[in-house]
Image (tube, rainbow, N blue to C red; front, side, top):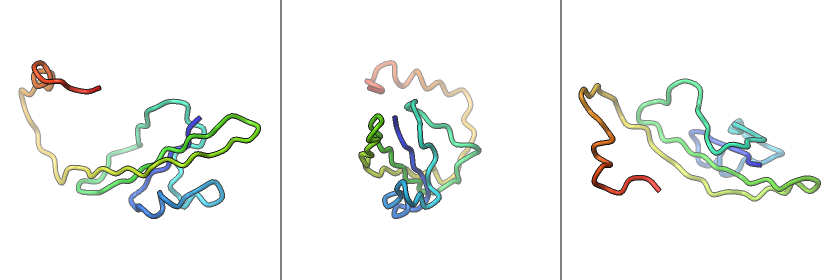
Length: 95
């Protein structure tokens, strides 16, 4: 089982825990490996996230994960006739 935390403040995401979620707890019993946030992310904003592993009952020990970050592009623009699979055709992409 996983516990997922995310937010705009590194310290909040890093310091949050069971007793004090610091308003960054997204999921306490997440079984999947994906998360789709509601709505759009803000342009130019840096977001931080952490995934903690929680062991099975009865101890349910929490193993704190590392804090990761990404920054959303500063703006967006429409690109027509772009086929992303063409890029991956001759280069190693993904895993």
